[in-house]
Length: 252
Image (cartoon, rainbow, N blue to C red; front, side, top):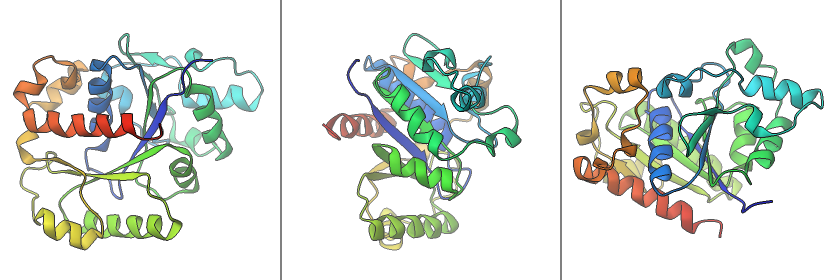
């Protein structure tokens, strides 16, 4: 058995925050640090990781669940899709009705079966406070809350932070992403911290907004794999570097 990796779940209190895109960008950044990464698409209804990577999968998380339920599971590698030598992903179900059948006990199983095969497991999920998502948040090593600069998102994030404070959970960080919509920057960082009730740990400014992002998706490109990324986007590179360093230091 190899060295135990670390798991990080990206979660938002509403859709449209750029969370799935950030999951792929983080995978690229980690891969550039010579880390082997597994992205798990745990949006069991409408996952988009395969689309963002422009890769079709012969098997997905529902196939794994079926074999798990029937004692046919052998190894996690039988179900993942290769993006490159360092990045692999486990696709979401092809049918939303399949995702509804996956039970909470499966979450701990899938983490246990993959945590020793990869340096990092990056988990993308939807914004529902479902029992499966709550169970997922309870079982991962680290949580990255992704939020935008708008009132609804701030209100919902405040609720999530309050829940975590009551539960005594501290293994979370907050990323403010203003790059999805350069015109949504209604509140200052100071105001957001006051309203949410916690600090903003990482920040992607509107300068990181990419007009040609759709073309990158069509080609399945992860821009953090570009060696020139740090020069082209120095502020974004600083944010991803901070996330990486914090993940390296946590849970040691």
